[in-house]
Image (cartoon, rainbow, N blue to C red; front, top):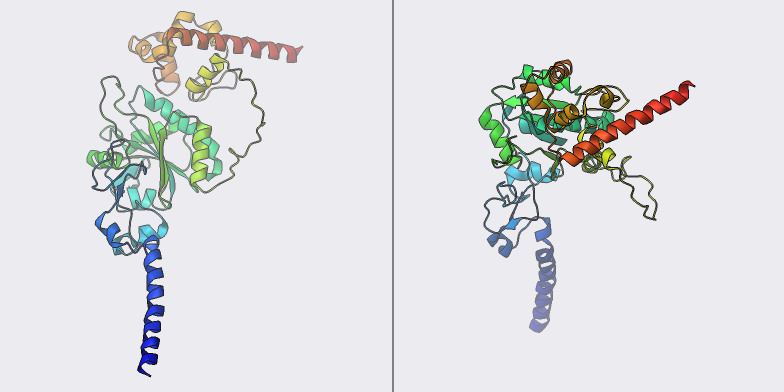
Amino acid sequence: MKFKYAKLLLLGMLMFSIPLLINSRFAAPFGFASFAQQQDPEYSCPMHPEVKSKTGGSCPKCGMTLKQPSKPDVPAATADSQSGAQWGGSHFPNVELTTQDGKKVRFYDDLIKGKVVAIDLIYTTCKYNCPLETARLVQLQKLMGDRMGKDVFFYSISIEPEHDTPEVLKAYAEKYHVGPGWLFLTGKQADIKLISHKLGLDSLPSADDPDGHTPHLLIGNEATGLWMKNSALDNTRFLAMKIEHLMGYQSSSLANEKYSTTAANLNIDMGQYLFSTRCAACHTIGNGDKIGPDLLGVTEVRERAWLARMIVDSNKLIEEKDPIATALFKKYKEIRMPPLGLPEADVNTLIDFMKIQTARLNNVKARTQN
């Protein structure tokens, strides 16, 4: 009889130990870390998840502080973990900023939390990348359509807050015909410096870069914890597709296009390429004024040497008080054309393209009138 009870006791202990063994195998993926995991925490960069470390520190790529993913059993991280964001309110500064309309907002609570956003750094007196950067984002805003201010939000933060008051930022936004869903923000210098560092948008000073900052665009979805840093001067359709993917659109109107399975021969017009990448954000040829003037016929009314100087660096002509450059500067709301830094051959190609396009459109117009 004793032997029988011993067998039953042994069987019961074995049955009880099986679920413990199973639970110990599957506990870690659901947040219950093993002893080894507790002893060796892993840190990673919010901007570059592939950068990992056992000891913490800073990311060698962007300088951001390496973070540990939030754990469900830590009360302070519960909200962020449940929302799927590994770097939520504990990472983003919740400092106070002011919009171009004078409204006080909190960076994390009001602008970032639970939203899909695109963020860049600008300053209104910039003579280099900022004008083109803002013009390209205007193009991107148009591609996003009525999703702006509802599904996605743009934020341009001034790195020169002493000058860029709400009134200055409002006038700047109006110059570029900025629509709803896009805020221009100013605040305390220390707070903006903290934001730019935390977002990985600050850049080291460089003697070769008189602009003082790199035209980065950070796009991300705080709710999912997915973030991506791009060039603010990148192809706007590419940026729009990336934003749509962050919003959860797997089959977007921009990406879901029909393509032939047979590769076609590429026939790239260098002049058209230069115009579309360097000029089209602000100018058209025959479709009216945008931020800058319509360039239809410009090769017929301006000397080639003057056009070349205007393309290379219009700011020098303005500083020299060139009457034509100064008049255009005032007419188009004193928006500075950034120096394009093109070699002479590219400048000539661009001028020839404008000349050819003008002749083509004039011929089309003449045929329709006859």
